[in-house]
Length: 244
Image (cartoon, rainbow, N blue to C red; front, side):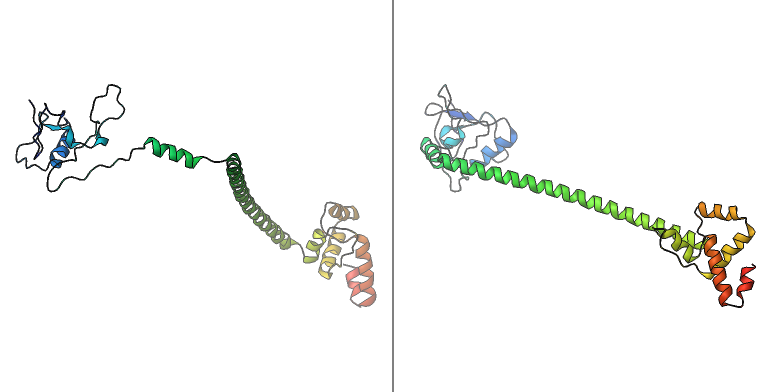
């Protein structure tokens, strides 16, 4: 006949059901500590037992088909007649009345259900739109940065071109290349006219016109003749310019 190992308990296997200490060392130590017994050097073994009165109802398996009171695998004894009993394990079980009340509280009318569904759909649509707009904004920022880099690259290239042109062309020649229309007359500088006259005298008429056709910024032969006549008529040094 097995006896209960708890303090101040005289139950045995004839009076109530007994349960062996767990084989797991940690759980067996927990059971032993909860009994508040002074075990001394002797450690509890699996041969020791506790009766069913030391376990709360929540520590037994519920709704067993065979009707037996069997402990849960993680059951812990907490009911002992000692000065400093262990803390009880409180597990709230849902009764049929509580379940029915919860169902009644959760009941809603069809109109309320439709309203809730509509609100949720609107929230989903708003969230989707926000995500889409954020994605578009991020893409726009990336495109803006790309265009800024492209503009900076173009400006740098244009600046280098201008520097190269200014290294062998005069400002009026650069202005001649930059103008869009050919209808507006351009005021050529005296230095450019002197250079054009030298080229015209060094080259033949066909060679000079070939340079102009290839895009080299030079005044036309007619312009040269008109300016030479103007200079020669207004300045005594014009005759020297005419015969350069």
